[in-house]
Length: 429
Ligand code: HOZ
Image (cartoon, rainbow, N blue to C red; front, side, top):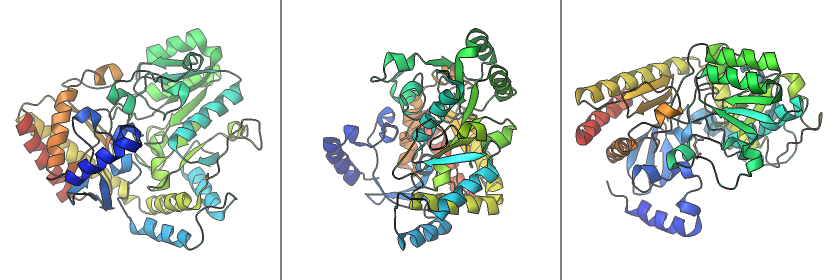
């Protein structure tokens, strides 16, 4: 595979953009090569600027459950383009999107649209603090909630990938309001509540972690956290930016039957356009201005294009529940096939999957928290990634991200990926 044009673009990009990328997670830095520059996508396929074709298992880092250029989404966007891209004023479509979310996500009685997952978590935390009159937030190591100052403590995703444990530029005072705990460790949560119960404004967590690779909650973990929050008056925030409308139509909260007080959404709810949302119990959401005194705002919030991308995607998912069966089958097929291929050549590999979120960890141990994930052989992951890319399989460029399967991946695509993984394992064994 030639990558001359991507290489030239990357050199040019580095002159004007820090690291040549507009988000560190896409830099390929930890996998020992330069990124490829993408020009086009269709279904589950993408093409780079050197005309190389890939089967895409990133899906824009989660939004594209329906694949690139899904006809329903493209038609909705085209219709909006006829009318105008932004008004900074209320529109009917944003009310429809809000009502759709309220009707589907169990915890959400009211919702506010924002422009990204980061805005959603930042705002949800502020609302929780305003509602409780407390400052402290509990988060979990390896969970990532966007680049919110006080949530960049022991964060997953790009920070885990690049080995940045705590971001520079976050005032100590902000970081001190955050209490990081090990994920899936209910004793640590119980101890934190017994010491600080009356001071905790919020517990924020990914109900299925995607940002240290895919790590599901252990049995009873979410419910016990729910009970402790209810007992001590802390607001439970599920960060469903990644899991919302992906692991099930109603997100992880419907899959596990645990209802948070607030939920943050993003990714799938924009169908590939920039959007985020936070919502939850009415009495909490009514703290938000202009009803209440917690201020939150945005010029492009509820932007017609993003709303059209989201509405068309969510309506399609609501009306076509077989999408979730399809991605479950594809996910299981890929997990089984790749694990068998690794076993055949003696590669130490373990995997976690919830529906269409899947991670292969270069470790022989079960991965249930950040300490476990941190022991993975990231060098081996880098070799595997490069071997897969060279065969036309586009994976997340980090051991600490989940890959995403979409409704557009056929059995042939999945089998092709398994075959490529077999070749990759042989090459690196
Ligand atoms: N939030 C994405 C999943 N970890 C990564 C995308 C990014 O940070 O650029």
